[in-house]
Amino acid sequence: MEQQTETSRPDLWTTPARGGSPDGGPPEACPRRRGGPVAASLLALTVAVSGCAASQGSASTAAPAGRTAERTAPGRSAAPATPAATAPATQPAREAADPPAPGTVIPKDPARLARALTDTTARLRRAIDDWIRDGGPAEGRAPEPVVLLALYQQRIYRHLARNPKTASRTYPRLSKALAGEAEANATAGRNLLSLVHPVSRPARFRVREPEPAGVLLEHFRHAERRFGVDWEVLAAVMFVETKFGRVRSSSHTGAKGPMQFMPGTWAAYGMGGDVHDTRDALLAAANYLRASGAPRDYRRALYAYNHSWAYVDAVRLHARQIKRDIRNYYAYYNWQVFVVTTRGDRRLTGP
Image 1 (cartoon, rainbow, N blue to C red):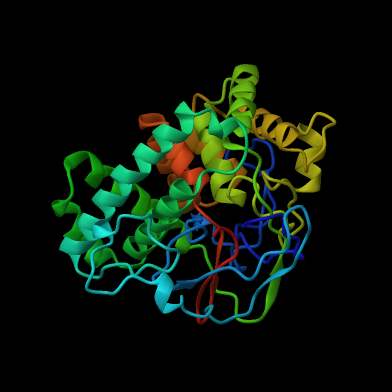
Image 2 (cartoon, rainbow, N blue to C red):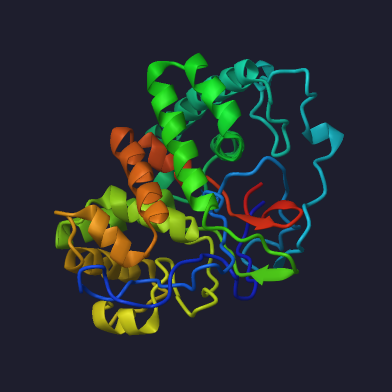
């Protein structure tokens, strides 16, 4: 059972040094030294940052609900899933009646990979529909089927992002709609992975459960109404930056909060709020993006937020997926935090 976990500051997110926008606009919201380690929230990637890896292990043991605990990325991959939690490599995931366990094998063959992604996405969307119908997004953590299916989907996309040749042979085996979605997610993940420097030594991270998806959605829409910045873009930024607030550590350059603001930028755009408060941080992000060119020019605004075109393109790809189908927002919400280490990926949150 996932609970609040407190670990010390992470060396995640890499971006350029502090500076202004390319056209003399406001300073970037979350500048980071280019070449530093990044938190994979990529596909959690954030992608990689959240999600783009072929190998991964389960997170460390959680403390009792409501208590804090420390989680460490040890510079080596986590122990493999136990046999009971891992589907045999010869058994397609789609044949399982239950949601895939956290360590279920990712097929390597493009045909089987396409079947696994098709089946997982269909089942995940049905589970999300049930969750929304029952009013669950406003109340707390998602039901187990949503969490497990989203994690398996995330792991598939991490694999596709890391293996472009396999990905190119998988897309033609998908429906036209899913092929476009898959390519977008894998491309976003690959962009974010390009910014990642694997952690080589033990590193501690502060992570916790995010606010309920429905509560975050209200915050996003409130910020959109006030500043005219699309809520889907704000959601994509938060997804890439901290996996919807799961990562609570400051960056190695001092960026803080769920939207990763540097102190000086927060002083200019935080409107007197609390940088660690989700609602205040989202309003500040919308304020900053608006001052940087949004909604007229999202590329310029996002580049001001983080001086990396790979970052900009990844955020826009994720935002488009959310706009295309709001169920993608609920799926991303359930993607977990991964840290890329020199010996594999370590998952810090989730089942």
